[in-house]
Length: 217
Image 1 (cartoon, helix red, strand yellow):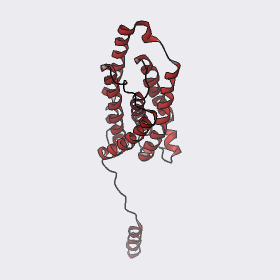
Image 2: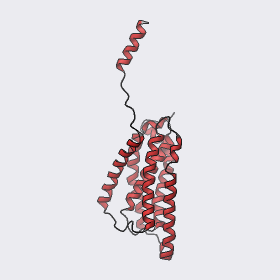
Image 3: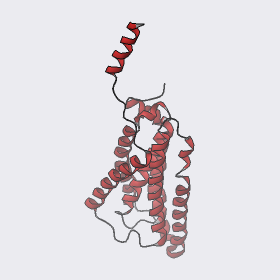
């Protein structure tokens, strides 16, 4: 019995303290501060387009994409914690519906105002999709590192929410730069790229966590 007590004391003396995770709200705010800083640098380098948010439907679309990014980030830090309800994954859905509604409203308004010109596509608008991917992919990898322990709990859901958050924020940032875009272009190249990245996260979420060293077995 003495040897057992001595072994327990020995193991306890060598144990490292485990620092608990910060509350999801605090982690979300810190993450949004980092993402906002990156997007501010991108906008500062590329130049702000003063006419980007003149139309009411453009402001609604932009605010909705920003709200999707914020709510998806908070949901990410919730579902990545063991024991938290998986229902947090539904949090960004109303904002996502509002985003689509804003784009749809914009398409109808432009079709009424511009006629067939509202359907004209510019080849340079495809650069928006590439810019969103280039900004969001590094950010989502950083975010997955922050929630890497979720790989043993909810890897696919966490990866999906993290990708949705970063891609939506990237879309909002890119929307402040490019000019001459119709709402149809926003639907195809902004929302479309967000959908593509989210689809990839569904397919590769578990592999991403395995790549950074954490994945459910």
